[in-house]
Image 1 (cartoon, rainbow, N blue to C red):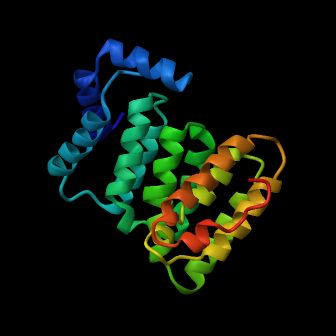
Image 2: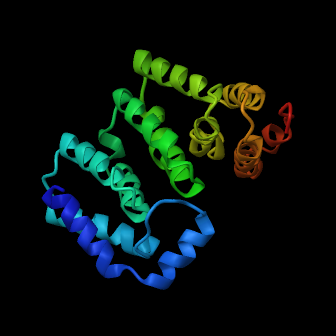
Length: 216
């Protein structure tokens, strides 16, 4: 591992506890490894890394994200997500392919949802012109993929602007219809995402939240 990845791994091991590791393994029912570091400890470790490496470039951050993700330890993967969140303003349209791979591989709400809400959503929202059009086309494709986690990510990604009273509600409904019609099951994961977005917008736009989504 690189020096930065070693730093993260060692910090998470120090913060870990066997009882938390067992509890998380039972809760998530995942075949990933667990060290038992809390969410706060993971976020704190990434902050400490930032203080240790204030000059980290975008390319270095993205490379470290990929290295952390390859570890197959849950907390290391969550640290990769947090690192992406920290550097989201430096990401661009080309990073969606890498993130798509993470979503396909994650298969856990606790990893997919923050990727969608705090990385994909803000990344796409900052784009304009041809870059935005390509990103929107990618999310449209995700909504129709056989992989149910990509469908979920496509639906959750626009949550922030929709909750703020803006965003593309018609686009969300279109993707929701596509996601519900996609094959290979997993529709409970999709329905959860639709309901979650509708709950978020209900306070600011109750007229939108009342719109029917076929199959939900």
